[in-house]
Length: 186
Image (cartoon, rainbow, N blue to C red; front, side):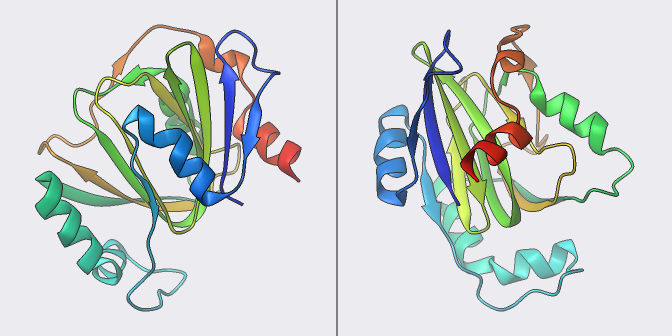
């Protein structure tokens, strides 16, 4: 289930939950966050490679590239047996910003974005079919859980791709982890 919880940034136990897609969009829109759903143009095999994934969403990708002047697109896939999953998780868990806006589309699986804006933390659980953009210079972090299982299309306006500027804040440690958040929704 796609979900959004909005917390005061100093009270991680006091969140307001939204699960209706339109309500989630309405809460994120004032922040400049694009949030929408895409569908595949054809079915994908479980072991689909990057070229197959990009082909399945080619029309939507080309539309976004034209609108936002993206220069590079790639596919990130992590599974519970990936040897570097813990390293990737730790890197993304630290609060950071990008000079560029960040766009992710979940082809499969799910992950949890945390946006730290105006003394609030917006925890956005993205699942298959969800596209989210995080505006440039928005402090945020991402948790994929202890046993990640997701495939994302990543779009960048710079040829360098993912470049983070870490804030040094420890705020991420105060909020529910992906696994805790998902368990609380169940």
